[in-house]
Length: 303
Ligand SMILES: [Zn+2]
Image 1 (cartoon, rainbow, N blue to C red):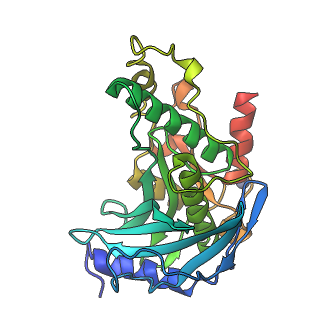
Image 2 (image 1 turned 30 degrees about the vertical axis):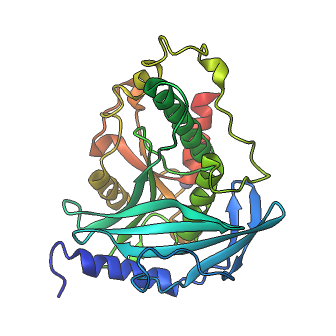
């Protein structure tokens, strides 16, 4: 019998689904494909050797530049029964942890697990701390925007939502396991490309520049620029627990086209009346859209 708040049980359910997944390693990034293959030739950094709940089952190798980018997914118990899925990358002699997602169990919402992580950058810059903060925030904005254009679910608070897993039904409710693996690896690889310090760049993407011309080149007056952009966004962000409720209300189907994850789409949560037009972040103003309908809706607003 499942106990309430049994994080160990929930995480193991997710791990067992991941272990059973037969993902080929060919990944799609928007309209591009990276012809990866299953398996790695080297073992990639284990910070807790032997404790990987995935038993090293998810290693993939991608051709990149003149070499090979090796990727290893590893799932660890973090602290206090919290779990996190990590992506390690290695190219030549350079290796490191590129990206991770938390397994966040929402007690208020049927104990479903949200696979989510805030997208942010932590690298150091020369100059004042305000300038460094501005660069990191700007990079975050560009990265979040790129992911949204690629059809990812990124909130106004820069939280990436990669999946929602129901440990009782033992399934992802808003995406498929193959799409989840694809997306997790894609975000990890793109993050590494953007960080630039993991030793690789993807040829299909432009190299990220700091766009220094946005700033005056001087420190004065730039400190408040990135902070203004984060202000007053919190009410627009849809709380995690509410997301599952919206999916359930809409019977896990896109309200526009009627498709579900079984039809090959991902499901996302959308404001019916846009927040910018006064729409509230509450159950009756939220709806389920698939990634395709959501993208064409946002394009309509942009156009
Ligand atoms: Zn749809």
